[in-house]
Amino acid sequence: MARRLISSPGFLAGTALGKGDEIVLTDHDFPSVTAACEQRAAREGVVVRKVKIPVPYAGADDFCERLLMEITERTRLLVIPHVTSTVGQTLPIARVAAIAEARGIPFYIDGAQSFAHVPTTDALRASAFGTSLHKWLCAPPGTGFLFVRGDRMEAITPLFAPSRPVAGARRYEQFGAIDIAPLLAVAEAVAIHEAIGAERKRHRLRALTMRWIGALEDHPRFRLLTRVDEQDPVGIATFAIDEIPPADLAAALRAEHQVLVAALATPVVQGVRVSTNLYTTTREVDRFVDAVRTVMKRR
Image (cartoon, rainbow, N blue to C red; front, top):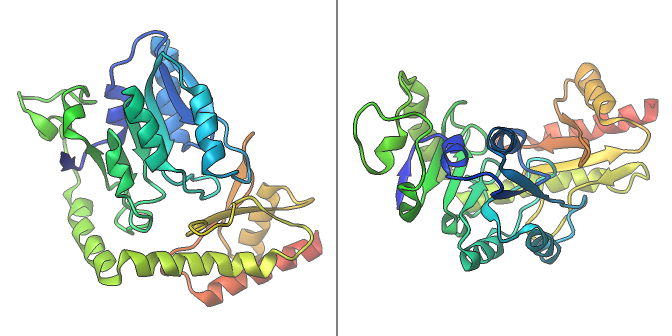
């Protein structure tokens, strides 16, 4: 196995695929991940198949059944988010890994919304695991890593051709000029993370998320789009308010209350995504709740 700071799109672009070969992803994948797969479809005739995940999430059994329905004899790559960026749902990656292994299908996990607070042991069963580090690790923007299993490494063509013959993971590290300062700051982010501890961090994020959900869930116009269970939500959850479009709600929260949330208006999710982090205080969460109630009263 090898761990290097390399480009996650390199795995999606560098995996050998031919016309008619199929990539299976989900309709909750991050837009840039979906775009990378659809670009290959447009250029090379690769077929993109999507697992449709209901909102709210119906659970691991339902997801695996839907995944199996999309896998065919032409499936050459699975692309699954560890935690969805849409509604913050943790997908059953250990079970997905077993499905992929039994069929000999390479399996990529997008860990951008899970790394540094959701256990990733099972993720290392994948052919590759990629993540950004500016989110839950709180490292500088532009930092990240891609883990590639050693037995998959030689099969992946580098996104940028090496300027000299190199073997192993070093062949993926050809980017030209690199801003070294953000990479050096990753070590400080890791040190802070380890001082806090992943379990304490997860507990804190869960508590903050459930605090605002608990304060709003009894309102008749409030609809939670994230399934609540023993592991979710942690840090991310999405909701909707009847009769208020997500974009209007997000705009009002920002303009009138200086609260920043993300409006989602896609064929899959129409709601407002709320992300809390370690630096979010309970006072700020309560202020957010009051702001949502105020907006609902006025509209």
